[in-house]
Image (cartoon, rainbow, N blue to C red; front, side):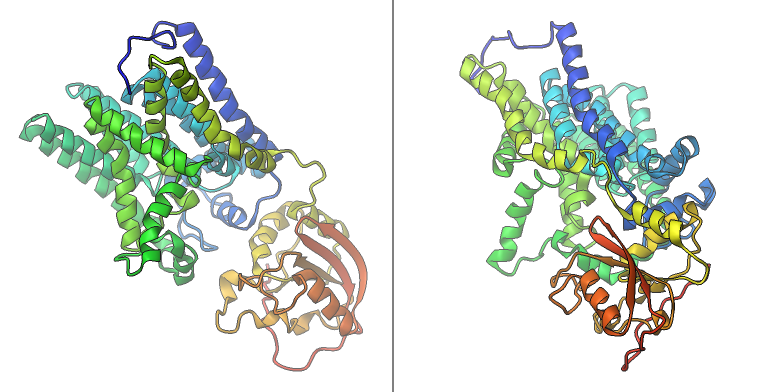
Length: 537
């Protein structure tokens, strides 16, 4: 970047404009998340499962034990629990904390970029964070991912402050305490804390701050590791996900092939690097974003800020190492903590270009962040836009509650509905009794869900059977594969009719169907009995 004295576009001496831009960018980033919070429909399977780990329990009972194959840091659960006490245990109450975490992440990205480089860099980083698709997507879902991004932003900011003022004990103490809180609030804080510790040690060695400083950094690092270890042993290791082979297989693409044994495996590394700007970065034009990111790191190095380069890059290196040894998948929503490390260097490039002597370069710099977010705006709007009259699982449960009679049988084709049914059953006064398969309990990989072609005998001879089925079909997913060219709902509806059932009513809903059948004259099919899952309340 050519040196210049042009400062016409600098915000250093224009505090009014700077404050206005900060407010405007924050509003632009916050608005889609708040819309999504209030427009989002019923909780989906994993959300409902996590809600049942939180809602009925006190703060000290959270995660003891986890049920429904869930895992979540205690701090995240405590934050969610606290807001439900204020906002209630509806969808908004449960999702409010992830939304709040996303808003905090946006707000604190500005001072992070400003501390590392300049106010202009902070504004650009804030803009990219706020309008990136992935943070918006997970800002209104009952999962801890948005808090991962928040913890990373705050830890990096505290570390940048401590590195900028090495003699400020309050800054160092603030970083120490922030690390302890993060260790109990975010699983991925382990990678960020490792990166922060690396940057502190690097700074102590590079600037020759003495053995006392190194020992202090080491002691702080040990305290963070102990805090995370206690949290892991007390809560996280109790989750069945920690040892579930199918969960590991599900995230297999996030594990780095190491050592790579083919050209395809070798391509995983650059491919995953550039894709990181899509997920979790939430940006478009991944290759442009990746190259600008690398140039931003180079500019920081040229300006004598190598320690900040280490601070931003180290967490990414540590999660890559964890991925290489198959301990943590480097994929999508699980690495939302990477967002601040990805966007700040891009902000550095834009900020440097804004001081260039050529106006064309300055205009191009302003256009760059817009170009990176525009390709994802349609995707973001499709995700957050209000959908009046959406007939989702909540609508289905309302229909069952309105027509349910004692003795009715509820049959669910697919266990993905089980947790949602359990969550909403209490709200609508329904007994938690149903027949079907819950893939959290009965998944059999070898048999590939034989119940899908052999309906449980308990539905036969019953005068009223509520049938809930998916309208999604996929050969690629064994959890949805019905060995039939029809979608699940159509297949089982035809199956009921074939064996003497009579459809009484139909209530179509989003991606699924609800039907009421009279199976009193139906004949039990011959052959092997299907998997049954009667569950008394």
